[in-house]
Image 1 (cartoon, helix red, strand yellow):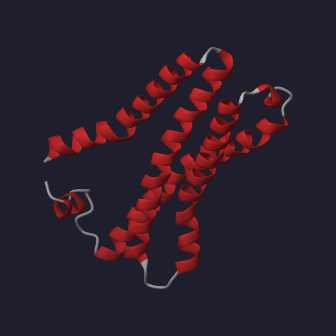
Image 2 (cartoon, helix red, strand yellow):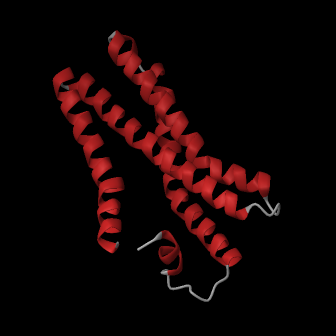
Length: 162
């Protein structure tokens, strides 16, 4: 099934392009609301970590790992919140089609960075609590889990539909 057919295969055959774009954008914003809350909580939590008593006990690799996941959380936050900022900036400017495509790109980029960040957080926690070897395994499994659930499963479904 091609993308044009998928666009019209939504049970909304009677809507025009403007209505479809508005619906697509609203659906995307609804999806992002859940993600925005989670990533903001994760980012806020990560920002407090250096102020804990155990932070000075981390070795150099753990501190670099922490800074990496913190940067990932900040990037993911930026990507996930960007569609709202774009909408506010372009409100009633006749840019709905561009806005839907840009918001979709930001959401995908944000989810990609979020998956990497979550795997990094799992790596860091396992490294501090158990061992570096356990951290590599746990972080890899977390990344595989997110990749399978967020990308492989939908791609398999899309391939089945084609």
